[in-house]
Image (cartoon, helix red, strand yellow):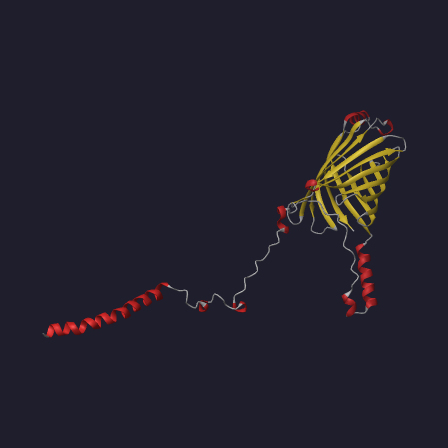
Length: 324
């Protein structure tokens, strides 16, 4: 009878608790899958604007400087520039410290020094020439006054043998104007005291420093008798040591016509070649030794032989180069 009594008591209890269990299960399932009732405000989806990090502005690059990489093509030149000078400054800060009148005088003196005009005497050759049976002398010098653009030049060149009348004495005066940083124009006159008869020439020439540092010059001369001549020179100074300089040079004369009075035939008249080794420790006075060779050419040489003169000669030289 006891088991039957227990079944009679538990059965109604189980039946009465089943609705509550079903409701609890349904509530749990709803809580798991239904988020519509959840408060999402704490997930920061609606943060105040002032607390949100502001986006950094993206820097805008200026590409104008690279537009087409249109950089100017670099040019390299060995020529000095000729750009106009910058304007003279008008502000003088030194006037705030020193007396303005004294500073003005100082500036005037400085500008005056930049426009220099001076006098110089340059003796390129003053030498004794020792030749076989006939020693002689030679010189090549010039004096000038002026600045770096315009100068007045007085030049002389000559040679001769001791005990005889000089073979050649030339004196030229000309205006020299700078054409560019390398070359100068020459305009003037030259008078030849020797050989006889004397001649006066109108002179036009050019001189300068050619590429590879060759000193060159060329002149065209028209005499008062109408004959025309030309002369070209070239020299090069090669430094061997700090004080020793060797200087080879060449000079050639050319006649455009026969000049019987001067025993000159048309064509190349004369050629001179020389080389001198100079001790250049003091440029104001530099001694040298060397060799000099001269030869008359063409019809001029034939005229010299017909007159009983030598057409060529070589000599050892010793001399001095000076500058004052």
